[in-house]
Length: 256
Length: 313
Image (cartoon, rainbow over all chains, first blue to last red; front, side, top):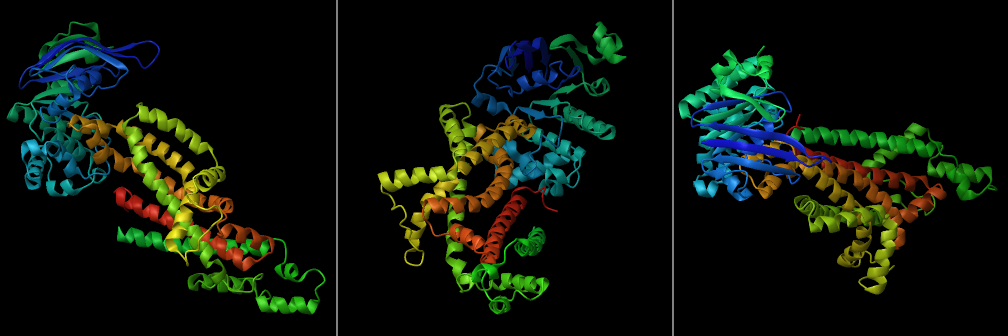
């Protein structure tokens, strides 16, 4: 479903060009959960942003192939990528407080992906609200009516992240990209979010690209793992292979 | 919300009382005696005592302050020492002139800087940005009174859109009065417009690079949708605060500007009444200016509460 090949991202915002990501290859099949693990600065977030079509800065170059169900994400025009964003690819960011607009209520933010495509989807306000409440319930939010009407600062961190996942899932995307979605949360909430993602994957067959620096989270959730360091892929394979007999020194260091 | 506004309003009244006390105290402590100023140094002690009695200056300080405070709420500021008529009737027209001029300048600032700020933010690096930014820089660095002179020359003398010095009273022709005030208002507004554009543009760009904006992009928003649905509400808040602050400056710059345009506003009488120790007039004027500033900041506070749900307590 998603193929990344020879992905290279270079920045030109300083005097010397800076390679953020180089020679990254991997694929995600339908219903698969792929984890990318690596220390900060390893290029994992950049890769995720590139797949979601969110790298539009003018002072950088992107080369290689990101093929999402036949769409070339790297080279398609913005308007075409916009159709995919939110509909076929959902994105969940690290910090649920900063990734929600503080002055908008939670409900409209969950609904937004639908509202943008209101005409194409032919949905009324009531339909959208119904769908929003439904998806909010399915990610484990109780008291959905209250949260729908609340502002982001009025709900807890775990609720915010669930709401963000709901917002990403509202149009049943084929791929959900989670960029360190549990890092800003405490351990118990972290586990619950992982459970939500796992359940979602089993129930709906949504593929997940899960980025984390935390190996235990990756181990608990993913089928396959890509280990990255300094913008390069160090090792990739199934979770069992990587964890039981890592072949590269860096992976061993990460695990032990 | 209503509770918050009531709280702010009570706070406004308390601030007003404290300010009035400070103002009254300052003019109590200022050197110079209005009685001696009026009668001259050769006045007989009887005449001095009589005038003191007449102006109520031999009453204790707190009693006089209390009368002054009551006067604020009944808009009775006593009688001018110099002109012998009531301060309220002396200042009424001048206050209306300054108020109209400042409000008009504020309106101009809001009406021009918001659309332009949004536009330049949206087209950062484009041609319009390259034209507007240096113009901004220039407008910001020119003082209002110089702009006043330029406007008088260009629109008054060259284009003859108005007659310099030909002030029209609002009593005779209200629209003529407003029309005449447009020109000084622009002189007041232009530097502030430039500042607001810059502030707003900076804030929009800053908000547009925050996580929630990227999230909004990831949902398929285009730039326009992002700007109006997400960024603008967050980005206007510093500008609203700033506009509240420049309101104070409008009144003060207005005192200079009205000289340039020969508008019979507060400025001339303020200077005269300070030099003749006409304290009832000065106190009333300073209080009015303070009140204007307080009301504007009250309004910006209310706007904040309306825009930002986090302010509500």
